[in-house]
Length: 559
Ligand code: VG1
Ligand code: CO
Image (cartoon, rainbow, N blue to C red; front, top):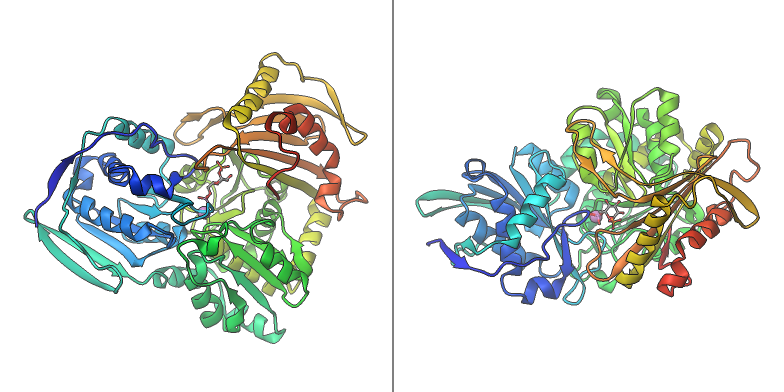
């Protein structure tokens, strides 16, 4: 078999967003060489000397078009001198599993075929993420380079006749253009499960479940977590088979959004409301997100989840064996974690939205636990957020404290006070309207129109202390990232944040975040977040004029 170089026309829209390149599946399928070009751009971003003979991990969340993309990666990788591909059986690997494999095999990186929480299918979304040798999402320097290459690409290299069956486990070596090329097809779950058994005490969780007949519901939303849930929850932890639902990965996720939030995982929430199960969790398409639900549908804010894991990290054997060096959260994530860091006298960092910003801090040993309000939680066991890890962290805490999910949360508030948090998503709004909202807010920053002003919402007053567009300087490599979200910070520490999503495939998605602290003595401590935050939500809608500009009277999703 021979490799050849094929001429191509470059695209100008292959700029990776918050996490990878995401477009309508049809774009990847029908625009000539769209997928080939992007794969070539990824490979070209790796220095020649490092690419020759290197190992790459390849896999994805099972969505429509994934297997075609895997086949293309095989043909293009070999033609670019890659020495070995490690591929999950049938192409299936979760994002956290890939992060683990990259580290375990000292691979140059990994290509992840997923549009994560976006729906899948021929008329939905497809995506490609690239992770670097530390196992984490490519930092902006790398994605910028990929984008630059993609804009002026004139050809790609391919071995068109190399067709590898990756449905069955095993290793195959081919000699192509005089060099050896190996494709290792491995179990999708084995290495990941092994890693989890080294982080958590499965026996302790198992006996807790059995002792009190603890009932769980793991909802994979037909995403990639299904096989991992079946293996870990039903086999390793011995839970009944009905503890794992929607466990078969489907190419279109059953026609639904594989997004673990109250709107798209409503089925799990409704099931939990029946009061039969003690613990519920849902995951996104590629397995890096998690939503925790307690008995009777008690919702755990992802911000609180992170803070609770931080406060109780000693319930997790991994954190007993390895030093807890520090914590970090993304900027829009509530300040609940900050209070735990202060109490435990541990270093704390704030980074922009996107997991790639945690990588340097973890690599430098500054943090061992981090998270985002968007249902992402993880630790330095890998360099990705990890949905199953978060669920097992919670089970470890419950088994250790012998408390219910709700008790753990309310006890936390009674100790630290409560950072009340909500996020409003306005999905697929008109881009012009979204941009003009951001421009108006930017104008308010530049002209200082809101500084020092007292704003009133639902009869409550808040005085603006600061308004800016978040700028981050990486403490390790000093890279500066600007315009990461408009922040309005009030005198009492409450915050309103606006940013536009970087993961959509069409139109714009506005995200509005509200975070406000109430002390542990406050009589409203256990009230619903919507009630507590009503005044600030009113203020936020007034400042941003979202309804007027977008014509939307309510958001698509409220967290
Ligand atoms: C969203 C979330 C962000 C997360 C990113 C990738 O980005 O807000 O916190 O890291 O998705 O998650 P954006 O730009 O749409 O707000 V995943 O699970 O879709 O890779
Ligand atoms: Co995801």
